[in-house]
Length: 116
Image 1 (cartoon, rainbow, N blue to C red):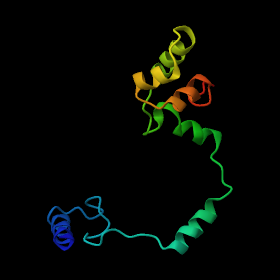
Image 2 (image 1 turned 180 degrees about the vertical axis):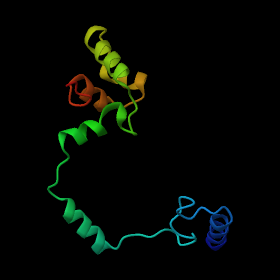
Image 3 (image 1 turned 60 degrees about the vertical axis):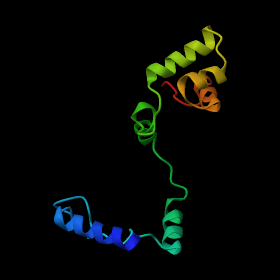
């Protein structure tokens, strides 16, 4: 039951001394985390509307540097070469590299993984 898990969480956080600054927990546990109210979410959303990332920030988040990147620049080069000179279809490349066909289309059309 969830109550037992909450109790165990509290025990181990205290036993292992993982409350900040000694550890990574900010609370003693067992609270199932805090969530924002709908009003707070709305205010945070409004505060971000109209804001744009700078070119520098976009570069820092893009390509291999992204924690979500499945490809490297080397693989992107291989995909572009295979598509233009070796007559592979986008679907074949998608299966080969484990990404979606639309993603391949964005790569070969320089909509993503743009070279400066």
